[in-house]
Image (cartoon, rainbow over all chains, first blue to last red; front, side, top):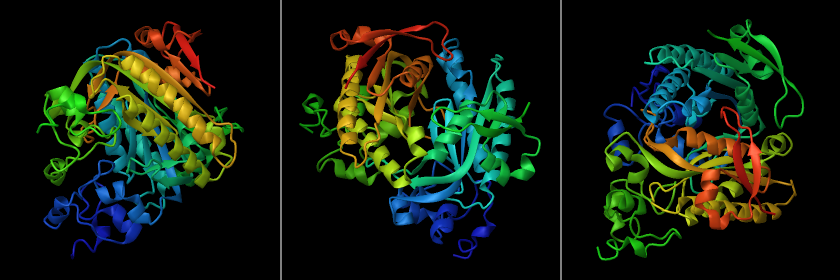
Length: 252
Length: 252
């Protein structure tokens, strides 16, 4: 258990020896790589699809990990999707469309994992990521902003290499705040986050143009060193009473 | 194997003896209930979370089931979500919010399963369902419309029994057409549907007010016996060039 008891040795490059989620949440070392992981694998404990540095205990046994059905936690929520995808989906053949979706989902996941986030939901040309659960990052707002920058850079590079130039771009929205994390469906066991902060992140993303990262004031403040070049934009968002003074990073 | 070889004996009430997806797609009987299911369970083949009448082979081994990464298929796509949830999420405490989300997700799933659909995606206060894959239903448009009616009825009844009356309602959008079904992410193994038809269903749902079921002309035509009372509404939808002559069923 020598390696397993040194979780700080693990990096964020997808090669942690023990589950970083179980360690951060419970201080329990669950081997996910190497020989020690084999007996766990026999009992169905493998690496999670949400992040290869966490295990399926984190993913599917929220009640076991947190001893409650859901908890209130401070987190940063990131939404991303492909701009103009609906229009494009009416024009090009399905096989090309699926190629674009795969490129997008894979590039985004790599960027999110590199900054300790998890890909909590994938929905066609969009996704939702959570930072600070189950892998704890005090600087979760900054981690999400860095992931967003990587998403923009890597997706642009991937889209440029496509056979045809569809002028595709990605929009990202980020908000940091209190969310409710847990299981909210009696028949699904994977956890998710809900609450006003999640909805605000989704609304910010809906306002992001191709190449833009739209951030709430909370995220901007917490990640000040990364967002000094961001421009202000006052946004009126559906379902949200007050206009939001968002900050926008434009990557190009 | 006597019961297993009679898949038509299975009902849609969540008590099929063999996986209806594997049977419909491959004519292979995979036991999912009773003693015959035990050896399969030992190898991780259990009932799917998407629908209790299909198994995890259907859910996670699309390439094995269809011998391709994705296929074009005729299907009906249903989106549903809670109207006014973003505004509500700013007003009430998280524990109440999670209660509402759970009620919604569970009532919707029961309605979708009762008509042989699968709950393919759950996203907070919303979901996406597919009809005609992997369980084959020639009348998939009608099945989706009936599920939508059940969703409206059951959610209304559930919301009425909540402690506080938040005036909550559900909006549903349905479209029938050709979609691309398969795996579109190299790290997730569960299948989904993408394409113009999926996006159109999502856009229709975004236009549905509380209590409404908004259907495309294609769905309305295929489910004519259920939609004769539906009212016409011309909708201009984001990313879709031509206005859509939708039909709207209002339940109340």
